[in-house]
Picture (tube, rainbow, N blue to C red):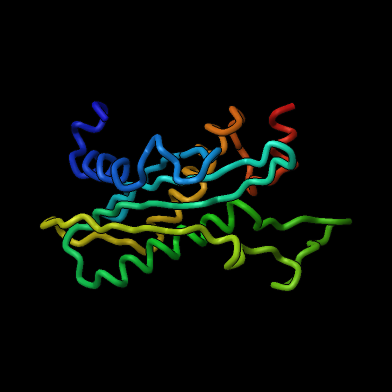
Amino acid sequence: LAMLDEQPRVKACVERVVELGQWGSPSVAGASQGIAICHDYGSTVVAICEASVDPETLAVTVHRYTAVVDCGVVIQPDGVVAQIEGGIMFGLSAALCEEITFEQGETVQSNLYNYPILTPSQAPEVTVEIVESAEAPGGVGELSVGVAAPALANAVFAATGWRSRDLPIRADRVLKGLA
């Protein structure tokens, strides 16, 4: 936090998400937490991901995302919340399951029937809070996509000690990383 003294808006978002997301006290027994920040488009979002890694199968389960966004004066609050939620789900889908693979020089995936995406049953609880601000309005279009995978990767690291460098974060990659 001391490193953010020159960025008071970012620092305020970090302080608020730590409180709102109950940093250090996961809501699910055995879960770990990771945090990530995206400061772009004149806006800031800070997210905490709460996830667990099954000790036997190494399957990753995301339980909860908490995000705090400062995008200046908010014109359409419901739109901001929808954009942040959607970006988290989009980024989380890429982080957990989206992948193009090749066999004999051709793509295996050809359409949605064989291209894995996050399903509603895999979607975590998401809480978004907007910081009241008098600053100029900023963008939120892709803002939260940038925190989805890093917050998850940090939660997986906290759970396993393995630092993910590739997506998607799958059990076989966790196993390989821990070997």
